[in-house]
Image (cartoon, rainbow, N blue to C red):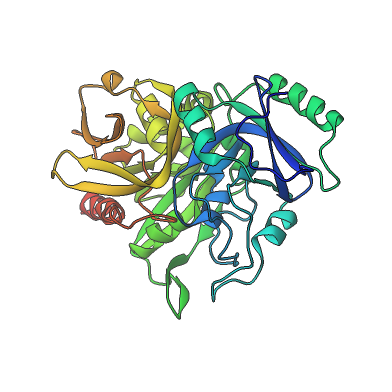
Length: 390
């Protein structure tokens, strides 16, 4: 066994085993057991509870580059879905006692409650460089409070080699709602908590490919009555609800795999010239519906500090991002105008259609976690809806 990147105790209770057989020793916390997934990294300094509950992290083990993760505890408000979809997390420093007035539960206890395995004591900077240089590997994190055994390592090696990876995997179907429901909760404010939208003036149908709750709150805050439908809803299902606009949500997995059922639905909606707004996976699925292509990125974009340039205004927005696939900009149709581009690597971050009230972005404007630079996109969607109604 290679024993690289270690900052471990004499008797390790945790380990990360990569698909090439590399073993990184550490200290387990959270739930006991092991978990397999794609090992990615996130550069956010805060918002770990929102990150761990983001459905777009289905199938992934998150390496946090910021060392002090978990120290503000957890609470029932800062969640993006009722059941976390991430496979586990890796951090540098042991989690200390919570130090935040909003904390109601220790992070370790919260992880145990959701059966999420954590691993501390890893040199996360070096692991991040490995992912940066070689791409996101498959890995297995193991937590055995009695001490990691040879049997633990061998079982993890076999599981890491056998896992097929995210390319070609449809995970949206696993995290989507199973039935339609109404959403009325609006955005949060200090001292008041979450507001309720009780006087909507337009109706938005949100297709749930793994929707974050704060996206739905931001839609409600624009004056929308929000109806959430499953990822497998057809165009006829959605049109029967008489929407004023349709939202295509974020979500996990390979967009080409999800597109097998999502693309015909979106194409049916495009034919009706309804206002459409897509985020993240929704952005990618919209592109596929227009005949464009997507591809897997070597390392992806994950963090709350990604600079994106709005090509139409010249403004640079600091954005929150979480995606491992990207739209191949050169395959977009002539009717599409590129609106946003990443200043990290030049990849596509948004486009709009010239002939229809349709646009999408690759990043997360709902700022949960992350900056609020891009909140204006929800207002833009609402204005398109009002103009279309007139």
